[in-house]
View 1: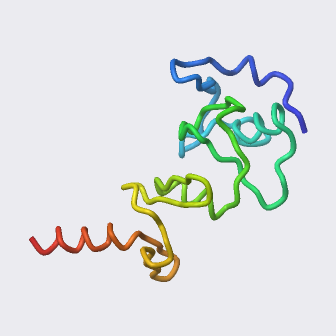
View 2: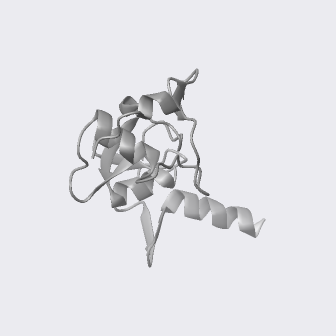
Length: 127
């Protein structure tokens, strides 16, 4: 499904984001009558979302519709990005720029964190 008049609902900002001027949901994402606005924008200006993929805002602005700021990623990668992680090439980094290697990653059930950050948090709590 293509959305014909999305461009009339956006306004560029100083960061080259195309800000959605329509309604927002409780999480700050733009909404249309059929979909979230960024998903509608991706479908309209980029193409179909590949199976098993989600649309991620590279700019981290939830109501941005600029197709250059949107990319299709796996759910796992989208979750990592939402936690403040970044990716350079094939290497992930926590929000404090520690490399997320096998040795430096701590798993507790579904919770994943950087061992360096975990150890620093423990040191801070002992003070």
